[in-house]
Length: 72
Image (tube, rainbow, N blue to C red; front, side, top):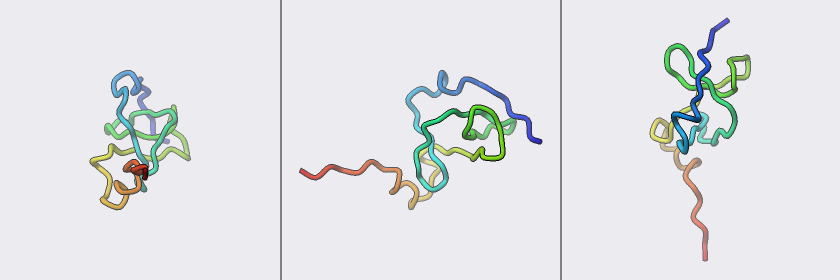
């Protein structure tokens, strides 16, 4: 089992959005792994997935994550 370091990421990264690899925005709890990666979920478990900042996403994922422009 991998041990996770629980930190208050929201306090340090307030306002910074996090995404799954496919560009879907993550809106739940997070935890930081010993290697510095951010994962979904308050604590590490079987369903935890790595989270990314917008700049770390592929171009395809960025286009999915980019807000849609409203037509007038």
